[in-house]
Image (cartoon, rainbow, N blue to C red; front, side, top):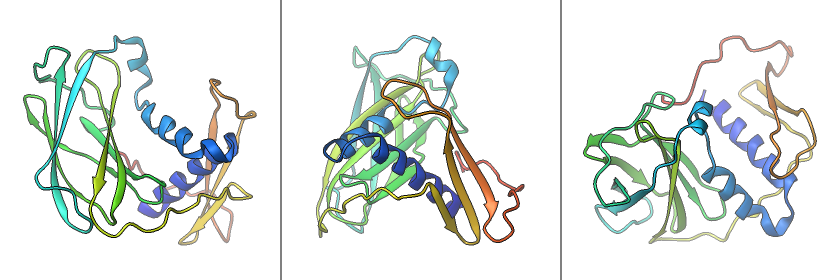
Length: 213
């Protein structure tokens, strides 16, 4: 199932690359991740002003597991104590390297009084973007971002190259992406993913949810 998730992430990356020019590739991807919306109904709710404190147990270092504490407060500095469950979790955390070659989607544990904790392991040194997605009770979907510098070997940046076809195959499974209309900025577009057996081309029927797992 994780392989299929990786395929879907790869296809979404290709969309971002096709939709923008070479100079804006990384900025566009960060913008897309920062505007994640797991729950459409939250758009009708009021956006709450929050403050987010990010604290690692130790200075981040490559190949070392480090406890991250994220504290969510309101605009007066008071901890926000209640959060809604959004796709089975109260918080989704994206950890991505600056060149987007390294990517993690993890779920911090809520400890109460606005405090979330999660162990994070960076596989290399360099700059990483942390993107927390959560929903304060009765409010709209909220995204907070934080950049962290990680000690350790920093490989040369990986250049993202768009694939020529929107089809990926892994472990005998083929995933195809079809887009209803031409990609345009500030315009909603439906993305259609098709999962098939790579040899028989028969639809895969036993897919299961991956968010929250």
